[in-house]
Figure 1 (cartoon, each protein chain N blue to C red):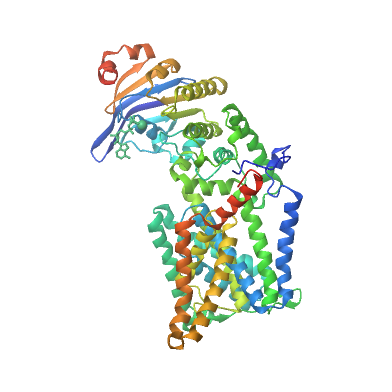
Figure 2 (cartoon, each protein chain N blue to C red):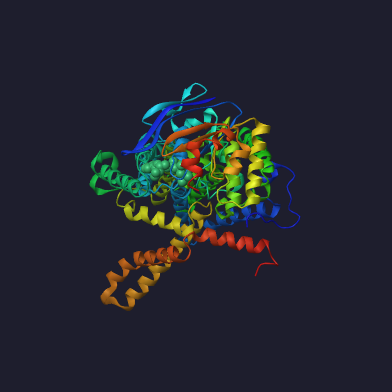
Length: 355
Length: 251
Ligand SMILES: Nc1ncnc2c1ncn2[C@@H]1O[C@H](COP(=O)(O)OP(=O)(O)OP(=O)(O)O)[C@@H](O)[C@H]1O
Ligand SMILES: [Mg+2]
């Protein structure tokens, strides 16, 4: 399908063939989308601003999972714990050393990357289910440590510490509408980097290891090295996402949704969006977060209609809903929304011959 | 070029290779034949450092492959195809071949992510090499097709292309023509001969089609139940009574 292009769209060089945004209109569309998102904070709609901000940093976290699980085929159940690490790094470096955000976020990325590397070591020996169990260890160890060591720094059993608002060029970013732009900037950068990774040596080696690690090894790829790189990149992105989340919520700690639930939710978002596809994280995260809010709203409405079951309805509607959506996807579209999108594009290119 | 010395391999008591020795000279097309389960694939797996024989040495240009880690084999100049095609099914034909340029592409992970000047130029330079191979194998028209969806014959050809993209000195082919129709087999035989002639690659080939083996190979090794029962020119092997008994007699 992807072979077909509209008539008149030819390449005169390999460089041209390798372009991603082939035509001027595609470049304009891209710019317009980013601009459109950048205008959201001006709307003043608090719900929209908070939600889109949450979507953006969640996408960064899911992009990390996409590298590890989608592209390299290594299941990880620890992404939320790595976000917690990133959040703490941003908080502590800003709090105690007064570092600016240009330093704290990259530090969060690299620091979390190193932690991810450590939990990636079992991938030398185990795959699939067993590796998932090993990454689960991260999900238990990291939050436990954050509650039990250095309580004066990490918040101890209270489970949270404050995160200072970043100051950029004299402006204090203490409103979500401002942090929004930090998230947007990070998301644009990570997306560009990931698109580049996907089309060059590193990305091909990720997918080679996923599709056939034995063949890859015989053909000169060191699977262990590649897997470790994937763990590093995935944790880096989790670190960035965690940093953004911490700045957005102005506090960080185990109390604030960094648990196994959250890790599984991120994985589910990736599956629904489309494993291994660059669009997957965008489609999956946006769909689930908006649907979740819808579910919350429905739950709240139902609770007011049936006050006797109010607490049950309020607490269980959301997970039930997520479970249902995930199951439907696994049955009807296991390749996720991104795959739907590809089909749609192919149909459009072949018009008027497509039905 | 390649010297296999007294190689024995067993899995939990079952002997798969029993003290096999042979030499392959540079620029030779060397065939390994034998009945099903004779240990042919296992022999190739030993050469590609995928299986570790319990005994013996396998020397390739002075390196003992038994002691080399699997992912270093390609760097020594050895490439292979698999009996049950082992492509990267999620990548396109082009990407499969580019993935095999892994050992030749020098760009760092960071350069890869930034995709600035040098990295981009390097990608293009390797793209040229890969395009040439696709032209040669007549698979250029499917360069942007995901290989998982390709028909069997084409996938076999893409797999040969991927091995060639490594620019090997020694090429190991495990039943490159199995499951093909006559026309596809002839194409494949022509590609193999062309590769040998134009690129001067040494080839070790496993094949069940006796006619084909006799036609294209310079020397033949016959395995039966893990032991070498004959080695020589196609004519010598064809007339060897042990071979007729063990192999030709059965079919
Ligand atoms: N990894 C393994 N573990 C256990 N036994 C193995 C393994 N690999 C091969 N064998 C056994 O070794 C013997 C030889 O297998 P091999 O695949 O080398 O045969 P072959 O000559 O390639 O046969 P065919 O013509 O069917 O491809 C078989 O009996 C097989 O079951
Ligand atoms: Mg075999």
